[in-house]
Length: 304
Ligand code: RIB
Ligand code: CA
Image (cartoon, rainbow, N blue to C red; front, side, top):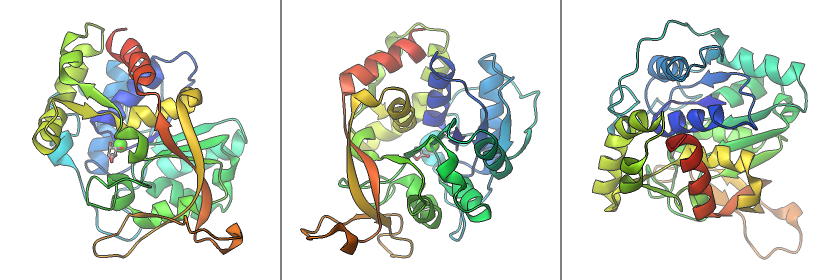
């Protein structure tokens, strides 16, 4: 997993740890919701707290490829883990995040599913260093973009793609086996505060504290006492693809627009030949079985 932990990244990591289908090979971190030193420390603390200090963490890019770094600490809190307090990490990062991606993909070609839930800076840098390396992944599942729905950080862009649009463009243009899990589906899933309060599992108290400021932000901005769980939905697309409807769409990413940087531009013109289309064909999640996903997520992360 490549993460910018972040509250929903933390929920996705807990879902991975609670899922028997998953062998979590390692985690690379990237600057995003909060600066790199925090996303890395949060990931180390979380894995240690969950009893999985054996999973190695690798620190990646501390800034986007071109644009200045942005953050979302207004949503995830100053630490990036909301109001949750976890014990200090005893472990340090095991190495460099981009090196981790390169080594893992090249030594285990076709075996490893890469799930990216932050800005795509590490993936873009790996592909630039070794062109074609992302194609060695069994699948690259990306939480990012808003294909046919509004953005969240701006009217046109989703946060991960907005934070590093050049990286998003380069990764989508790679020949990797991509699955794009954007706001088109992640905005369809709400974790209700009332359901979160009712949970009693070992992770529940941490989740309530971590989610507190995110729910406060989303309640204030969207008028709903709950929160989106973007990153767990992306992992869900890797674990339970049968819960999603996918569509192949020709897409590219705007990198420089004043109002549109990070926007996913989809070419749906009624053309006779796809060869004329802009961008590249990418498998995009367009629908999700909300009830079933939430039941699985709740059972594994909040009730277990
Ligand atoms: O737009 C939602 C995405 O941006 C999630 O991955 C969240 O953690 C932030 O990184
Ligand atoms: Ca994230």
